[in-house]
Image (cartoon, rainbow, N blue to C red; front, side, top):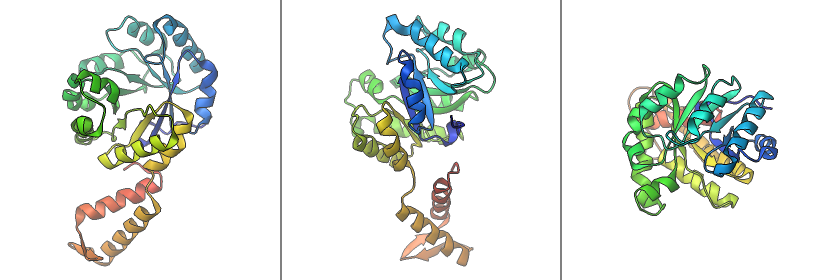
Length: 276
């Protein structure tokens, strides 16, 4: 099993239903940066306890992964945390329906030291609280739940309706000095759909994607990597900046001031697998 790269560097986050333990190893083998055992949406109420036991058994056997627990306030949340929170193998917890920073702070006091928290923003209240949520120390990263958010505001899940919410999460994360947020799942299982959605998310400033099928992993990962054309452009910019280090420089008729040079540095960093 590969060593997890951590929340900050991960671009592909694959859900696997908690009541399907026979799929856990396959999810790890998919190449996803992080695997999330799902105890919430993918599991029917009557199977919650069984899924929790399966997740605990997987962690006890050394299967490092994340777990999406049930939302705070549901009948299953406290038991999820009581059973799983002390596991040293638990890589992190995805907290659905996150709306209050205080819930995340309280959760951090109930889990093993070093357990990361990802706050999944899925409601209007959550979006309006995103800055406070991501600014609290226990939260490693935000993620966006487009389907639940669209339902909450009674809109479709198209780009226009959700653009403000997505941009809010990106800006809040940057302001707090946290990694770029992770975008919502793609329900269309065609790999081309996941790739298209991942490219859009990257263009908006997201740094990763939630996934629901192993076939989505490779195309989503590729979408978050800089293209050969982008790397070539970035190297040209940095070469030009080194030749004229003071002030703005020109390349191909375009001004290359500090923000452009910094963008080029970030592209090269991402191409080499560094956080930027």
